[in-house]
Length: 613
Image (cartoon, rainbow, N blue to C red):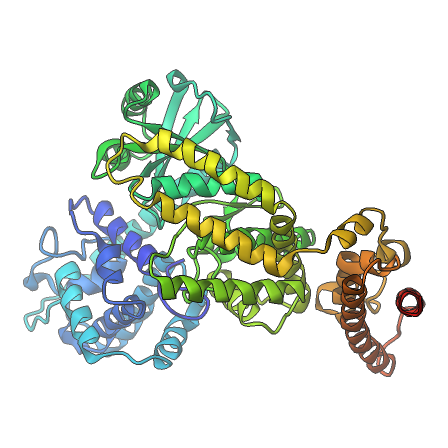
């Protein structure tokens, strides 16, 4: 979708739509539309679209037919195939009103706005909350004139209604064909299975298709009838991406597996020949294969695991998060966010970073979260590095306390709403922060093994990228970042040795006394009910409540957990009592709640006994 749920337009997606219009009309251009839209700041794409709207409908009858025919299939683009001024139809006010509705519908259908008919109001509301220099409006006007040949023409002649209707019918026919073909391609790739990237039979390449993406895009490659891999061009950040995958695998966080092939590798030549000779699913993609393999600083490519599924954006992302089985997705997402904090990978979920996020780098596949396009981002400036480590410390504390009011959770909620229109409740955020905490504690637990593995990864990267000029320039800085960040996380999230030993033998009180789903009122939704948070909290921390502590620190942590859960149970009780006055309350709900309170009382008694002894 070009327009996000909060109303703003994305430069990358909008640029792709404009490029698609040029391609549809057969007009060759070297213009990088997305880059031009991005260079003026985050607000510029929204200003551009609103400017297009104004040119279409607020200039009056003098607006040229290039804009009016935008919804009808004739070229709206600069100079190449646009109509002459003598072809401009004269429109009555009634015709203009009708034309306005037709063009709005056509444009927003192409934009695939999640805001629907209220797209303009949403865009204006988003823009009004920002300071926008006047020169941006002038810059948008200049691009509109350049890209769409927007002119004001006085000389108009009539075009018969029959001719106009024919054009509309033809455009609808073409649009329907395009939608059908796009859906067919999507179904085709969804039917593919991942092929192991360790040994790829390049002689079995059957077809390829280019997929545009924020990091430059990638090539889908079908092998035989049922398998696929992905070939991604790499630049000077190749080593950082390769390191990120190695670290993710060490920590057990799910990301798409990858393998780097450089031009010095014999397999590169075999792959290159196979891709050049293979059929392409979209004929316009053929020239991109050469760009994937040889353009610019690209002297290597990554063979990526093909992950069938949907990105966590737009309607598909929203539907994935609303599934009844989506609870595991939030914990997986939290684990991925924790990995990103270690890497300083800000181009995904902006938990501790100041950006809008890019949830297109998250794929939902078989009810599992899979990360793509991650990399280490070392910080060379000392003050900047110190500031980042301070944010990591704060995030670790927030994760340890499952703080739902933290700045990180606020940022995550905003990113989910903006990227796919999902309003995160406390239950989903609690699960997500539990996933964050799980990986942070894992980093602390395997700190020594992780630090010992980093030099081995460094040797591997050096051998792999030594023939690529500039690729290893900041390698030492990248591993220094990983070392420092690992120590920071372990410092905050480490567990005392005695507590680690005792936790092995503990069983979960929550799982024996409270079953998920037993607490809600009849007809209510667990995901919107405070008891859902209680159940999940007890499942994730109940083990601390089921055995006497061995040390003072363990006892202190136990008290904190009990305090947190009692507060949440109090909220649960308040809602149950309020509900009792207006609707029946299941007896099972009250019984389960009583069991939970009994378990907490037992745990609290153990703390007292331990303290007395």
